[in-house]
Image (cartoon, one colour):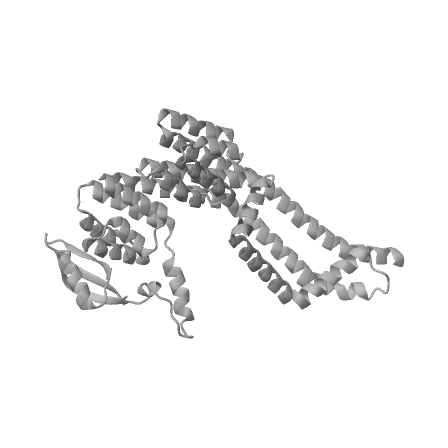
Length: 415
């Protein structure tokens, strides 16, 4: 569907501008009249954003397909900012359609602006905000469920504020984790480049000299030379093998059985397992607390939190707890019986159930475990840094030793 940029004047005489999607310029003008905007200029901005709703079938559409992939991606921070702005507008007493119109004018991200313009049009036609958001396919079940609960309770602005808080917390945590992992990733890339340069560029230049010595080379020198020749001759086969192994592994873990085994094994690893468990529990607690505070039922909240946890083994425990609640059990009992949740978490949940403050207790658990996520990843990074340095130094030392030892032996023989 085409996207149009427009300039106009509102009924209050205020100049306005923005973008909207419509089937034609005539339909765009009709939509603007319904919103009380008198157009002074309208022009089609192109198909890049609109094409995100349909993929090209022709053989020459690969470039457009690449653009579509980029257009479909809405940064989490952009989503959080838009939600916060909409919460402020609705909380100020502005009608929902007018709030959405004002929001569309404020959004800078082209694709998100197009999406919210579509949402505004659907709401203007009589749809609920939750249904309009769900129809775009760009908002997850958690987001839509909370919006629906907010509309039903009449506290949409408060629910939007809670969603914005949740999204901002997730972005903040992701940024912290990303900043911590920058140095290890850089070290890994640097190590790979150095080793590749030594094996494929430096070592072949010395190989001829070593082989012309007319003496038996040490086994590690022959091994390094063989590795160098193999890498230069069959690098493409190695690359294809690594890619095939990666794709095969990803296909296996995407199956129900394979994914469950992978996630369960991940939780049992010495250091990485703790980090994975802490992240999953933090997501679960934060999501469940946010949903319950917004007025979503415990059964639906657990169903959503199960998918947000990000680990199938943890999700299976949450599903067992949901089934137990349907039969009249408490939430804490099945979580404790599983052994997957630490005693502190189950105790706080149990206290929250008894006191009627489950949402507050879950929020405290989420806050505690968010801090533990950062601490655990910091410790893991501190462990990885010296390990990567030692690996790089060890590889370089072996290569240097393999090339220098024959030269030293030759020098000793000539004396």
